[in-house]
Image (cartoon, rainbow, N blue to C red; front, top):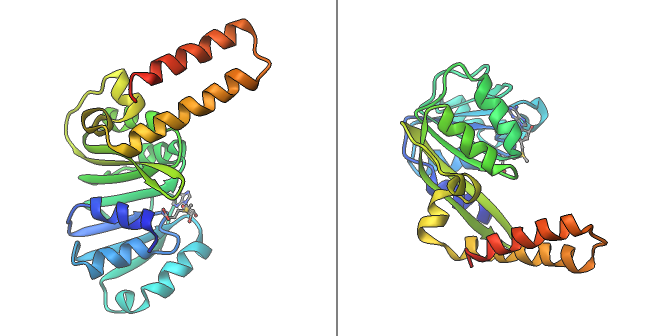
Length: 213
Ligand SMILES: C[S@@+](CC[C@H](N)C(=O)[O-])C[C@H]1O[C@@H](n2cnc3c(N)ncnc32)[C@H](O)[C@@H]1O
């Protein structure tokens, strides 16, 4: 498993039936079983070809009934599970999967690659509360990780934009991700041929971000 997958693995809660939606390689589901964090796993992917990798990895577990491999668009063909992971996809794809689901699990772990703000807003509307929501760094890439369970919650605009745990605990990965955004916006400001109006907008964005570093 890669460092990113380990970080995700540690945040997945113990459960009975775990589903990895868009599992591709299947490493996380395998780790969940081996680590005793669940009784059984569902490997699922929209692509039969991708799912084949997971099927190969977990051939024995499938044969012995601890794992099932199902080609499915999101939750469409899945039985009821109590915890699901959706990792490594864009936020809009994750939202579309959640909106189509007839039976959403009690617990969800999401690692969107972009549009995390949209995901935060939607999951709360869908009846989840935030357990953790923070940024982590692997190599040079910042990732967002959201751990959820069913319940009521409401998020401020600031929490939607930055993630609740980031605001509460200010982890170094969050601070550094904000610094990087400031650096990139400063480059745009200094190099670009910007209109006065855009310059003011970018300057204001930088000032806004500077509050967090
Ligand atoms: C970039 S890979 C991420 C694999 C793994 N989850 C990870 O984080 O390393 C995205 C996977 O999601 C699958 N996928 C994309 N849209 C999907 C959907 N609507 N339902 C199920 N799987 C989907 C793709 O086929 C691909 O295998």
